[in-house]
Amino acid sequence: MEYLIHILILICLYTILSASLNLIAGYTGLLSIAHAAFYGVGAYVAALMALHLQSSFLLNIICAIVLSGLLGALVGIPSLRIRDDYFVIVTFAFQVITFSILNNWVSFTGGPMGLPGIPQPELFGLKISSHLGFLALIGFFCVVTLLITRQIVLSPFGRVLKAIREDEVFTQAAGKNVATFKVLVFVIGAGMASLAGVMYAYYISFIDPTSFTVMESIFIISIVIIGGAGSFWGPVVGAIVLVLLPELLRFVGMPSSIAANIRQILYGGLLVAFMMWRPRGFLGEYAFQNKEARE
Amino acid sequence: MLWQLIINGIIAGAGYALVGIGFALIYNVGRFFHFAHGILFTVGAYTAFLCNQLLGLPLFLSVPVAIAVTAASGCLLNLVILGPITRRGGSPLVLLLASLGLYIVIQNVISLCFGDDIKTLSLGTIEKGLDFFGARVTPVQISIVISSAMLLIAVALFLRTTGLGKAMRAVSSNAALAEVCGISSRRLVLYAFGIGSALAGIAGVLAALDVNMTPTMGLNALMMGIVAVIIGGSQSVSGIALGALLIGLAQHVGAWKIGTQWQDSIAFIILFIFLLLRPEGFLGKKIRKAAV
Image 1 (cartoon, one colour):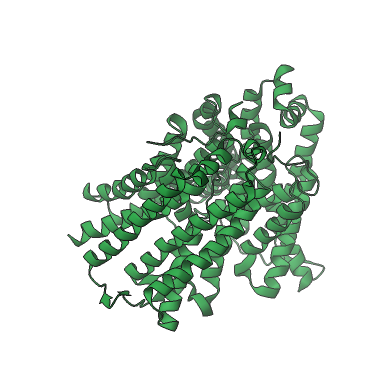
Image 2: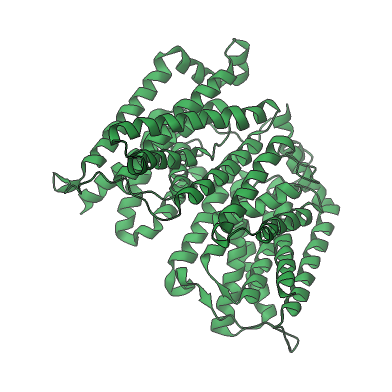
């Protein structure tokens, strides 16, 4: 039973991560492999504050979102000058630098040893300690994230994001300030990712940099793409499929020593297969081709 | 001390330049970021390891076999996966993602086959290193610098003098116009994959001989190659060589001041500076931006 709840919690966490990345990559068309960096910043801010300042759960969430949002703006700004594949490298660079800081600034982040002993969160005098409690908490934030993304994409703001994805020059010509929109969507997406990080830190109660590597970022973007970029339910479907598939292999009796490799082969292979036969994923409406590329 | 660091920087830069030039060849003709190029670096190293240490072939046979295997794997990736995606109208980002997927799959297959531990391609005896005006340099490191310089000159000459090289330059400057003139980009892409992958394989074998190998070595090497290409300009062999030298030197001199664990960050900060101030690289032409 606990195992089942753990899987559900993972699905919720990855839904938050991929739904927020979907805003950036799926709706706005800014392919980014820096999402695990925002995720990690959220986790580390919450962990450090809880350990050193004993500050409250909600305050930690707010601080994590603010800091991660600022970093999101920092990554969003280059997207005004640099596009497509060059921008992917910029996000990659941001991801690697963030990981280096988490891994090498030992006196502050604990380095490779990580940060153990993160206390259990307390919400309105209620201590959350059971698996079920965490599922309720994380599930709640997952639903909130999904509702917010739904509001965003249905709003005029969301329509401008899609317009930027389809034709940036035209959007600019129609009088929209493309720069503001791009930076804002990064701020929002990064803030949501850090929320997932905070939840992860409290849930696992131990964090180390290996949870926030480039490969994790690639995993999150794979969820978005396989589920369907630019679709509301895409990230949910993607998270369910990509979290469950490796777990299913466990039941066929695959030794756990090769499980990590098999998991990566699985989503790498899926990524290749989808790019070959169905670049828009299960449900997506965006296949990483803008107007310029189609012509 | 500084002199030794400069020498080390040049050696590192020579390796980055080899990876970068192969990546740029493929990028110029295929017009997408070929992430799986990084894994061919690893494939080169591990094929040499397999031939030399496990099958017992002598080194002078293992190295050519490794280079041939990487060149063939590069062509195979293009023929089976990336070429068909291009023909279906896949955008550069779709190709980038497919190539990234290939990287992940092959890297994990190598991990499964050989294990994640560090492997060495030992030359039998541990050489003391030669004295080079006060700096220690091993014969392998000298051969890295010499072979990298020779290969870079060869690629530059190939692009300027041979018909195939000129066709590649034509496609990279204007693919549609080149197609109109009867240059088949499909064939050229295959050649670019063959040559580029062979260069990555050579770089991988040399790196394995110099230090050691792990299944994840390729991604780092590729990133440094890409940074060299971006700051040097993808169209210019000398630009890439200069870019690679700049990163190599900055990493090693920087490591002296702030420690080796920040070497990747140093390279990427240089990349940020270039992208913000001079995104076309110091010898390149303008990169694609949103424009009418």
